[in-house]
Amino acid sequence: MSEEYLFTQDAGTVSYDSCNIDGITVDDDGTAAFDWNEIPVVEIDEPPHAEAFETDTFYNISDATVARPIKQPYIENDSVTWLKKPAEELRKMAWSLDNAPYTLGHPDTGMVKRVEDIHGFWKSPHYDSDEERLKEDLYVPTNDSEAKEFVEQNQDVSVGFYNRRAAEYDGDTGDLTDDEVDGFQVDMYGNHIAGVKRGRCSEAEGCGLDEGVQAGKIISETVDDADVGGDGDADENCDPCTKTMTDNDDDSGFDITVKTDDLSLDSLEEQFDRVAELRESYDAATESLNEIREDLDEHDFDVDADECPCETVEEVLHSHDDLESELGEVREELDGYRAEEVDEALDELVELNADRDQWEDADLDEIREEIDRREEVLDGIDTTTKGAGSGAEETTDEDDTEKTLSGRRTFGRGHNA
Image (tube, rainbow, N blue to C red; front, side, top):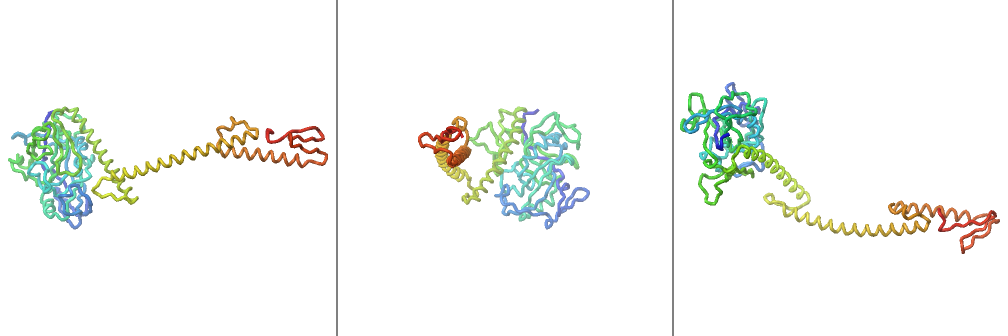
């Protein structure tokens, strides 16, 4: 595989023919007509790239096609190179286009770096294997008349993305076009998705090779040459061996870093696998943070929306620790008190001629029940013997001995009940 990491802009591909919503009708040649009064409108409190919008309501154009596993021509060093996006790579790329900015044509800087370039955003990317399309939902601000007019007049989309180029590919390339190409685009990572017009490029801009043929552009040759996440100017304080693969205006909160001294295939594949894992961890952490905010709100803890609830949580946890400590002391005192009660009950049971070892592991309720039972037996014996007939002799206090017609019988508190 080539060691170059390229920033590429696709040629236009049909986008809205896959939409199936009210307000959009598509004719046989794939041209869409828009009735903005019928297109669904949604309200989003905190949209991505919120600083670019002056509204929280957006037209929701769902299931637009943003990429397909096809081969396309690209202008590279004044010559044409045919490259293909494998279906498997589009599946792997999908997550990187979540929250991608929608731009009116490709930005002048190649990559999105300015808020004014953003006229919408994309959400919910997914690869449809049956139709072999990478689909996504487009959100257009309801107050952006320029964007609405542009969507109507420029009905193709073009993805701006980073990628490596491989001479061969062993995975699923898709069935739409054959694989007689100069290379395959792999390890793709999206930067933006632009609305473009068919055949809008001049030859100097990378289009117009032949009538009816569109070509994309390979903008950067290597990571060093690509303005990956920067503003195009050198920064004496930056690390020349590291470039961040997102624009600084993107508020997704997620960056990828590629080091130019570690661009082997194995290294990049490992990094991209880890990227997906890190994104999952980031999303899970965000969800947990939101749950913590909700819990704190329910318990009347005041946490501002733009503040991390960490200090409040720490305060709550500290209060919880203090309470646990106090409860621990109470438990210790209670355990000691119950131990004394058990010991006293065992002494009482031993006085009733019980084997202490036999009852050592019994709980207090069981010991008390046995004491009551033995005392009840003894009380029954006392009543029977002391109320005997006139032929019986009196029991003496000295040795608890009673004379009877048949002899002497001894009993008392030490009798084995």
